[in-house]
Amino acid sequence: MTISPSITGRTALVFLAVIAGAASLYWMRGILTPLALAVFLAMMIDSFARVLTQRVPAYPKNLALPTALILSILVFGLAVWVVTANGAGFVVQMREYAPRLNGVIAKLTSLVGIKVAPTIGELINQINPSKYAGAAAQSLQNFASSAILVLIYLGFIIASRRGFSRKIVALYPHRAERDGAMQLFQRIRNGVEQYLWIQTVTGLMIAVAAWAVMMLIGLDNALFWAFLIFIAAYIPILGGAVGCILPPIFALVQFPDTFLPALLLFGALELIFFIVGNVIYPRMQGDSLNMDPTVVLLSLAVWGALWGVTGMFLSTPLTVAAMLILAQFQGTRWIAILLSEDGDPSGDGLERAPPAPKASVAAKRPTQKPATRQNTTKGS
Image (tube, rainbow, N blue to C red; front, side):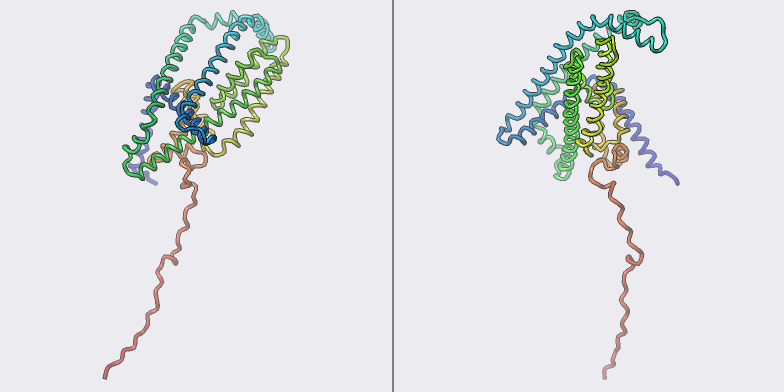
């Protein structure tokens, strides 16, 4: 079977476009990362405003967006307070944990047969903290500047949302094209909003249950750890691993005489993540995302390599948006089909519809009426 040169050229062009797009996303990550975060924050605020008007019909529509914005600022302030209030105490306790950490390292090294255990000071000196101090300071500076850019972008996006409908009318003068563009936008918005909503609800479930378990065990800074678990829940796959490993490690440091609290905490966190991830999450999600599990893992790696931690947070929503956009064009629809779970990325049922049965030859053959013999009479 020979492959058409046009198909080969089109496929090569698609791959070159993907490589060029990935390179552009990487080199412009300093500009695009805050913009992407601002767009998703604006979508969350707009979604909250629409939910407010739908659940409370008597609430004035012109006050829904300001109310959602004020509540979002309050939630952000609460998150900052949790980090600063508990983070300061966490840093102070880390100084007290150094001797205990030496004891934990000695126990762990004795279990693997190492006679002379290194101390935490020796390990830190081998890491060369002065080398990473500048990098850490630079990371904090970049985070602060990115946060300011996100807030600036968010303010301009919210201020310019009123002219969105007029821009759509100007871009698509014909009603059919405009309706198609609005349907695509609605699909992207609904998919992203549903994903963020599900991640938020399940993250709260995991964080509250983990906080209760850590309080029962007596782990210090339980609220701080619960907040970190909630934030990590937005990262697919890796978030659960981080949430299950870090608190038990610090339980080992806090309770150096026994491994029981750390083991109990690890088992309880694993049980919480298993119940939420395998029972509650699939029922809430259903077929809304329609993404192959392998694609979820691959998108986490790709967006993480392009945009770092921000790319990991936004990997699934960005891939969902890309899949829906690629499904609209015949030349790139095959990529969207590969990214989807059921082979129907746009949800229109075209790929899943069985082929129509071919008409038989006998059915296609026109029926011929038998010729009738006409009797002619001669006139006299």
